[in-house]
Each structure stands twice: as structure tokens, then as C-alpha cells.
Amino acid sequence: MRVSKQALILTLALAGAALTTTVGLVMADTMADTMADTRGEATGAQVGQPAPKFSLQDQDGKPVSLDQYKDKIVVLEWVNPQCPFVQRHYQEKTMISLRDKYKDQNVEWIAINSTNGTTAQDNKKWVSSNSLNYPILDDSQGTVGHAYGAVTTPQMFIIDKNRNVAYKGAIDNDPRGKEKDRLNYVDKALGELVAGKSVSTTETKSYGCSVKYAK
Image (cartoon, rainbow, N blue to C red; front, top):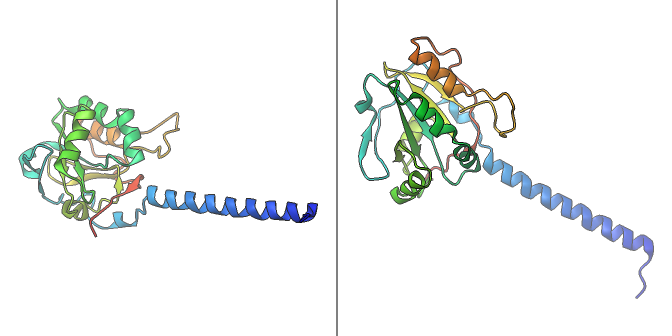
């Protein structure tokens, strides 16, 4: 059977349009899962208010509570080793470098994994593979994550010496990792706190993967 040139062109055009639509839908689904909806940040821990207390087990099964860090500044980092945004920051050593910068200035760093189904062994593997000198706490039930209103990984909270939330939001202003003049909000806030100053930027919109809470 002979096919006219016009029919062949039309068939190829329709096939191309269908492929473009399919690729677009796949990319949209991927981005929807990767870039989290941050509307939940309006709930949970609020700047200037007491930080929710918690007690969770770290990667070695050791209990860790907020109460044991009295008179210290505490940084809480929501983490998920499967999240591309988290992976990029760990490849760049963003968190580790900040931890090392302030570890001798009365600042403690704690990572919390609220991913449904995560295990202590998963967290231990991440600690080992990245040579972390701070714990990852198992919040696979999501109790602490919901109390703080954590919606993305990474997402950061800084608690001052008075146990109040001093900062909440993104680690920096560079979701795509392409900014030449990147501003690290956590570094800025910690620098101000250890100098006895008030935090000038207390809240920003977090970015990253959505926290995969238990349903």
C-alpha cells in the first residue's frame, strides 16, 4: 500500500506531538515530587516561640533529646538521603562545613529523618558514608516533623539558648545550586547569634523534596 507524502508528514507530526506531551507530563510529575509544596510551613514551630521538645533515637539507638542541649544553640536539619537536593548539599559539604565552623562556639547540629520506612541502619549508612560528626535521629513516624511543620528536605530550624525558634526555612537562596553569590541563611543566622545579636533574617521559604511522611 502506497502512503502519500502528506499523510506520512501528518503521521510523523502527530507522533512527535504525542511524544512531546508524554515527556512533558513525566517531567511535570518528577518536578511535582521533587519540589515540595511549602504551604505547611505556616503551621508547626514558629519563630520567636518555644521549640517543640522531642526525644528520638540516633543511628546507634542512643536517645537524643532537645533538653540535653541546655544553654546551647541547636541547628535542626531535616534530611532524606534519597533526595537529590540533600545529595547535592552533602556532595558540596554544605552542612558538614557549617557544623565544623561553629562546633567550638556552643552550637550543636542534629539531623532528623522523618522519611516513612527509614531505619536506624539507613541513617547509620548515611552517617558513615559522609563521615558525619553529628547524629541523625529516626523520626520515621513523623511525630517531630509534624510538630515542627517540616515540609522539605533539606529544611532548617535554629533554636537559640532560650529554647526559642530563631530561624526556620531554607539552608540558602540557591535551590538549583547555580548562584555565584550564594547566601547561606543558616551561616548568617549562626554568626549573628554567636555574636550576641538578633537574627536579621528569621524566616525564608524552604526548598527541596517533600518530606515523605507515613500516611
